[in-house]
Image (cartoon, rainbow over all chains, first blue to last red; front, side, top):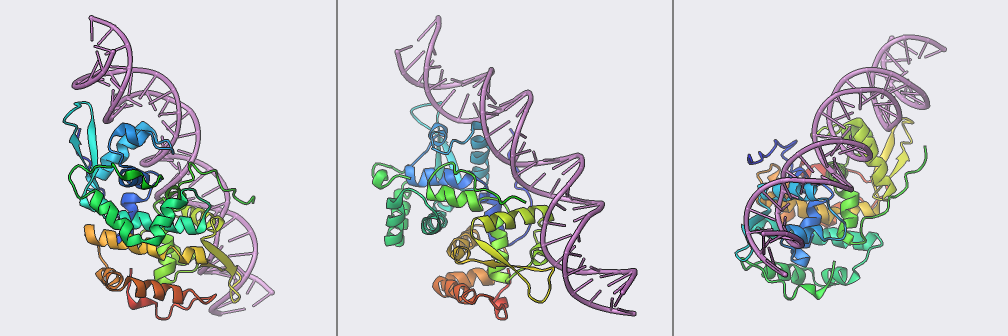
Amino acid sequence: MAKKRLPKRRSACPLNASVEMLGDRWSLLIIRDMMLLGSRTFKEFLGSYEGIATNILADRLRKLKVYGIIRTEQDPFDGRKLIYQLTPKGIDLAPVLTEMVLWAGRHEKTENRPLIRLMQEDKQKFLEQIRQRWAQPNPTMESKRTTTI
Amino acid sequence: MAKKRLPKRRSACPLNASVEMLGDRWSLLIIRDMMLLGSRTFKEFLGSYEGIATNILADRLRKLKVYGIIRTEQDPFDGRKLIYQLTPKGIDLAPVLTEMVLWAGRHEKTENRPLIRLMQEDKQKFLEQIRQRWAQPNPTMESKRTTTI
DNA sequence: CCAAGTAGCTTGCAAAATGCAAGTGAAAAT
DNA sequence: ATTTTCACTTGCATTTTGCAAGCTACTTGG
């Protein structure tokens, strides 16, 4: 399988760069699942409530990897499994996610008020939690369910 | 023409809400043009570097209006023109835009370092500028080109 | 006041992206 | 050894996008 080439950008604007990498209906949800639920395998992503199709999921994971937002490694205990992890670039998307959650929380009827409240009350602390959790090469998500998404 | 109905959400997650409204290749660029360049008419949006097609632009403006992110009024001096403006909900997207610009600025080769530097050096001040500029019902953009996008 | 723009769309059609169901092949579990 | 599980791929129908060409109401220049 040939490595996917990065297509030429429509413009050099930084917002356009973000939009070309993340501007679709699934990429940020995948990153949300990694960041907040600690999802790490294909199957775990599939289980998410919105119901992504397998071919689209495979495609998005491939692209996120090409962009350097996630990386993969083999599960040492199960040869079938691939472990998907956020790279530092991916972890660094936490503030973007946060602002999008807060915006929707302010202007839309949504669920998961606990997460929104947590983010509102101490954004810095919340971001710090995410970074800490992902600081180790293999993040443990034992304390992950402080809140659900 | 029937008013577009809001389709049912795939989930009640706040991030999903944001993604369903903004997760495509054009919506945030339109908001960028309004926020940073002061674009206010169909023609001005068309002039933006990335080159959106007229049918897509019309569709996105319609949706952004349905979502309450923008509103329109007639130009009092030119009956052909419609003036598009950000609503408070739209103005409130400034932090999302900012974080996306900063993220790309940190991790991608992009242009417009002055904007990125401005945002980095004083995010609060930058957001305040945007809010002030849009506080009046008809925002003047005389001081708009402190930086280009 | 009339012809020639101009603004903001819509329409038609081809190409690309998405969604769904049904595989596939390798590894693990029973 | 057979069945299950995992991470995909494939085929095909539907939807969205992109491009070019209208179209209609309004304005402008002569």
